[in-house]
Image (cartoon, rainbow, N blue to C red):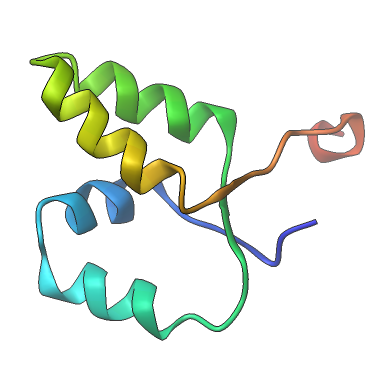
Length: 74
């Protein structure tokens, strides 16, 4: 299980080379994760080109995907 789940906006800012996002992500000492929802939001949003999708996939592959379990939605 991950200790931190990264918001979609942080990943988008990181991809756009926003210094604050880069600094924050690189300062984390714990395993960061994303959810399948984050993954879908980013890939769907990167629908302008295959190159853009590939760039985002490279970034997304740095994160562990944390799947929801039933206790998460109670």
